Length: 465
Ligand code: SF4
Image (tube, rainbow, N blue to C red; front, side):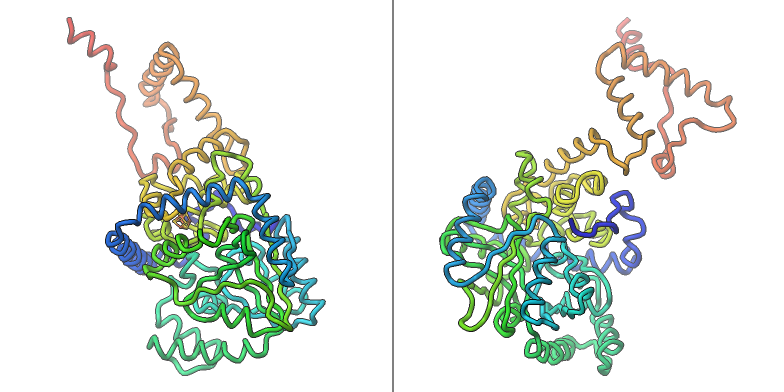
């Protein structure tokens, strides 16, 4: 399992939000996510078959998730015949060991990486640094975040929280470039620095957006050309994928490409779509397929649909909670609504049991999701499980309170007894030196309603007479 020691579900909205909880930070985040969400809505409204695409994608993914064993074996068979080595990793530690082993076999000292969320799960950059290998992010957002020594705040636009001025200062500080906040000048600086790195790198590491079982093809989508260079320039290419990335047939790919670009950034199609069928002659290619908690999610028929996610980021852009708190508040790799359902399943409710509660359950995420994941229902179900399962993030007092509440609500007599006790208790409370109903954070920002003299039933009987 990857290092999740920094993940404290109980700290949601506390220490992890430093910076983004500033009014200016959340305002900028809110505005850019709202802009992206609006762009996607407008784009979807012009496509009559949008809902058909969503339904088709949902069905294909559900089928793929239900047949992962067969599809992964088929994918492995078909890509191996073209010289690609396929390896499986049960957890992040094993995946890191495999990457390091490959790096050492090929004498690798410098790695260029294109965007891969799986490598974030693995904390791959740190693992490589520990054995003396330098890993450089080449996706512009990831590059900025790496230079700043931060974590991505969004799964599609990792540096969403940085302004052009922030980027200018960062380049001046870290790359010794003259300060500028002009967008083209900034991208020129990044391009100039990164170009050299592709040529010097001994190994490229990429993610995988889709792995086609029928043809043994991996599909990688991107906008900057960095994935193309990272996968083709160095002599070794390692592609990292979660087990859920496999889809059955090549004819299924277009529906996902249609949805992913549009839902992620409002583009009809991303600028580049790479279909890699095997190793380039004279070069080596490896695919590492990672579980890291996914089979745990798969084991529960109620939650396995979360594995259908294509990481478009649309649910983040539409989430009123994410818009206010940003990505770091969620404590691990996947923020926003998808993070609130996938993180507890990958790392366990005992670590991330608070995340399913980080939602208003407004349902905007599910409406925006291109593969129709019922995120709000998943959240409610995970809340139910979090309430039932023992968890260090929930206190004994909270558990006792919910147990008593469930007992008192499960019969009219119990309810009457409880309410009578509450009424007597509240009346007696005024004689105490402290108020027994000061419930910490619950009553700090709210007033408890006054208990009326007569009950509703009492009033009803009285009025009937
Ligand atoms: S849950 Fe749906 S909307 Fe959210 S990132 Fe995944 S595919 Fe996109």
